[in-house]
Length: 137
Image (cartoon, rainbow, N blue to C red; front, top):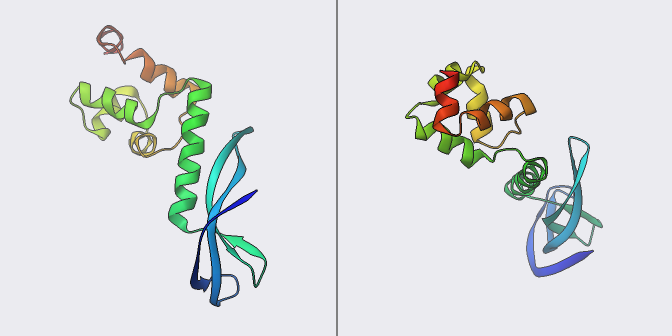
């Protein structure tokens, strides 16, 4: 269901022309690794062409919300928790990845919102406390 927030003039990227548009919200389901997540999407409706479209920032926000919810459901660490673990030990991303045996770009991806696999999450949970860090070291 579409909930109207405001009306405005703007360029519809589908019609490729200036139109009277309606900005609003609607509920959508996103599939994240075979799991359906309900999200509230910010969208524009073009009554002339009878279609919806979104801005890139709104699409990114919608997916980040879904990723966060997926992580919560699966018991995975959130990006800010991974960053806090790394900061706790005073390591940069490259050093942290090397310590864990991950690829260099992996930590950067996890800290910016990519969903980690279960094995990596387990390793991160292990070193969350200092004793686990010491054992791995």
